[in-house]
Length: 291
Image 1 (cartoon, rainbow, N blue to C red):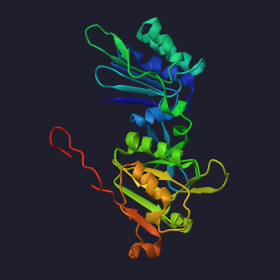
Image 2 (image 1 turned 135 degrees about the horizontal axis):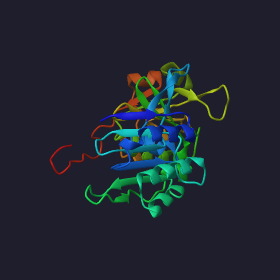
Image 3 (image 1 turned 90 degrees about the vertical axis):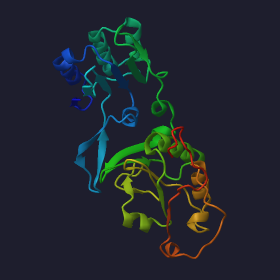
């Protein structure tokens, strides 16, 4: 499989030029994905690390807005043609879909769908069907749109941009990104003090305070080097394992921390809690007998 990737800052004219240079190999595609929000692409695995690295060792993530796959499995990625409104980007996508020869009623949906995902039904008849209803969880849901995605040391990191957000919003955000990005929680690292956060490097650029760093006290580690960084409010009146926010979030993710206790163990001296919630409440088996 060959990937032709031309991410040129969202310039529609450049993307159309790229299409014209390669369209002879992609006018009979098996799959088309066009999105308005980058996170819909990133969720499906279409992203790259940018070449620019910030002072803290993080790099931003760049994603295409249009992906076309042909019957050989080759893919063309461009970022100047998108969907979901009446602007230049969707009109660029419209031109590409016309070149492919799709029916008019299918092409016209590019202006109304925030996720335009098409798959060929059968090789023989060449017809296509939409995948999903065209909505985007990230464009249409303000809670899920509060994530900032970056890469650090090979890890894909989703930072919750809201500091001390409503706990229900934090839970909705965390449950969604856990199921769609992490796969499952392998470890949870929680800090009591911001000094410990700084020492361990869980800081990120602030979207609300220019020149300041956001500090993340609640880190979830998942599969495939993926992490979620949160900053819920702690009341500071109990040990970390008894913090109401800690218990509520972990319970929402399906992990039981047990009865409220105050154990005297070594990690309390550092005010850092490391939880590895493995086989705490439920073990799921698939039909083949695997775990």
